[in-house]
Image 1: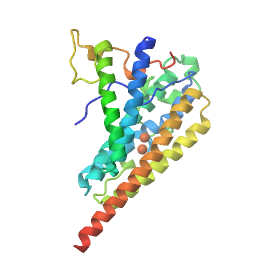
Image 2: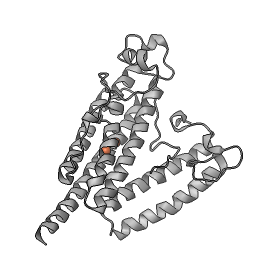
Image 3: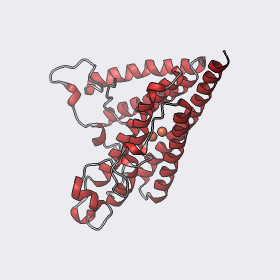
Image 4: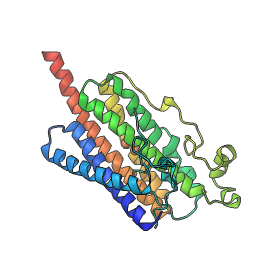
Length: 85
Length: 190
Ligand SMILES: [Fe+2]
Ligand SMILES: [Fe+2]
């Protein structure tokens, strides 16, 4: 994994984590408009980042569109990623 | 249903091969208060939750726990993947190695296999949410013991992240408990 791919993956992980936080918070505070605005902003950003990543480096989820060959199987798999680069 | 996202929830870094530390961290892979217990417990309790907030929360925290289970498996794997036989011999990981090689396996640090006996689903939302809050505190405490014995800065960083998550989960379960209690009281009086 080169630096550019790593940077994009890390950004996806960061925004993905913010979405986990707003998700759990909203589960018990479903009428919190400020949290909803944050969630929707992160959601938009997450879609943009994952679309970009999947077009360049392969699918993150099987529901996406792939060229030939099937890019979902591309390594490294999550437990093989070296985050030190 | 579930869809796999092909990424970890947190960037897992391991600085040095360390089979002994792997054998201790496996406590959270297959121990009573580990991530597998947490995930299966919450996902199993969903059917009898009375409010949408609690149904959603058990679904989403249960799912996050499976992501934590994957993080723990990755920590264990990165700690042992480059280990030589000499580095494994004489460590607490040796007993694991003769049965599972370098594969993570859901047992605790003492080698006892994971069991559904570690968890419960009472069919009673008040009892279940109290169990869940206790489970989060027990997971937090386990992470604190692990942080004390970790001498690997990368591993410690990931353990701290996981510890923080259990604190957030405890908070959210407490909120869900209040919501469920209000709902049950409302039903009693009207
Ligand atoms: Fe967890
Ligand atoms: Fe948790």
